[in-house]
Image (tube, rainbow, N blue to C red; front, top):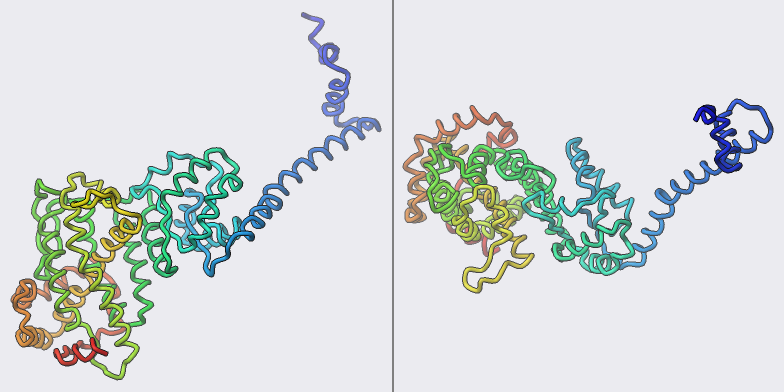
Length: 452
């Protein structure tokens, strides 16, 4: 064994070519001409290998994908969806999600809706309550991509993933609606702890606020700032069924929530608040919020659009809440929506029905709170308006609506409720229109506006 103690003795048992390579690599300081040639060959081969790999990853493969995408139908709009979830969450924390999706489109192609991460695992599909839902208006492109999925993947697991995706794609003809639904879904799917957390809900409110800003109406935008006064408690009650907290009562003021009833996770006072305020707003929204300036045509049009959106959502609120009342697992409200079925036909909901149910639930909560918080502010700062509303409701014969009569009978409590709310939620509210009082309009004006 002592004969093998030196490197030269060990090299006797390996091929000559390996010995030469070993000597040229180990004895790097040699000035021998043959050694220099070996060194150059090794460096050249390594450089060519690195350059080839980099060219494939950054030039050749992306170009091949672009060529494939160019051969597909080219719709007017491009579609983005989640790619690498960890990469997306990193950009979300930095506040530049738009940049991430822009880079994703540039990397894969202008009309490719998803690029799965290199380290993809099917286990990630079950980490959020929605599973995978892909909303797109580029339906023809999606069909083509799914049909050619075998040529677009570099990992065998992706083939299984495309099968999952093909069952989860929701096609919407209108790109604007598709964009809104994508934002709603991505708000949930990009946060790890969705149920019972506040940040996704507040982010969602901000998304919906931006959607309504498009209406370009100062009072609607400012009133949405006040929405947070009531939305926080209402939403946390809806999603978690927590006990002993405050919710929006049918009278418009904050009431203590009783303990959860054994028939469902939703506190009954919260359910009653949603149901009753839905009936209240359906009858009184136009009376309280339609503009009185006949010269403001744009303002009137924006309010009409807001009223149409509001009414369509409010009409669906009781149905949505009824579907959720039987759920006893406080962490399964959102999955319950996805698993819902028709109570008569026992048929599971279609993809568009699931989409509409989820989005209507979110929009209903937002829009249900909007009118009542605006009324709270106006009533709190303007005693004359209190009397005007009291008179107007009597004249319009709206006393049959319980919540309207209840609201009028509690006008003296409104100011304290408003100030107490501000103590918990200090917001820059109504800075642009605090000096503008709302003047109620009569039934004749409402009829004239609605028929216009």
